Picture 1: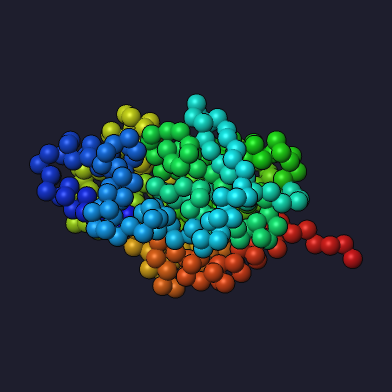
Picture 2 (picture 1 turned 60 degrees about the vertical axis):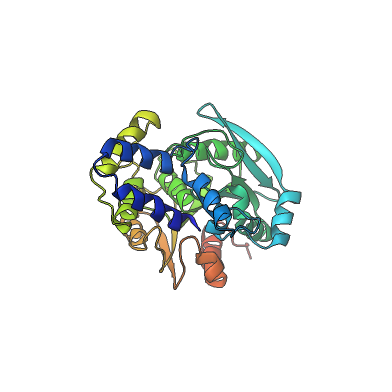
Length: 328
């Protein structure tokens, strides 16, 4: 069972707890944000898979992403990368660096409950195009420290620290930010930051939500659970413990102040982050922009569904914003 089905099971159960609003809100918080909780989505995914005897050796978040590449690509990822670390917000965060000659870099950010290794398909593709690639584990994911998922809000400032690391290697680096799902929210929020270094040339924003509030509200309504006052209660716990507000993590507001060109990508059959959210982001974006809607693709499945269209659109941005025309 994937993350969408797991969410449906848990959110449906919450519908029977409406009389216990505070308890239900705390359950929602622990399920969605607190990775130490025994009921967090990442743990329940794996438990349900084992109970259903559907596990084939790849954990549920890898299946959810659909971006891991072939076994050969995963082996390449394990053998060729170099582990690197930064400190951000008192947390030791992990990344994996893949080198190429030159000053062109891609910073790759994975999705919710996933990890850097699950982006091996993208890492391999960008590396084959000649880019240096840095794939990072978000806080509370993979080999990075942390217990609270920030839905892109604290992670956006972690991106600044990763960029600083790249610039310590190469002050002339030209950087692409590439994010999927929560990773998309992370780079989208960062793209509107006036402190974004000029070395960042554009952002690829793949299937991101407009805000955690809007995403959780959609999921609850999809499970036929009234979002109010349940979501308000979960947000109360989140503000007290994780120190950020679901409502104020607003990617739409961020892209109104975008500092770099943005390429928005989304599947037309995404039932986890609904496709209408990318239209809101695209319409609000104030910088140079383009959009690719991949027909029939579900959540985080645009690249596997139509890799040719995906690569062509990204290549058009590379040609426009990265490639320096030769002087005749």
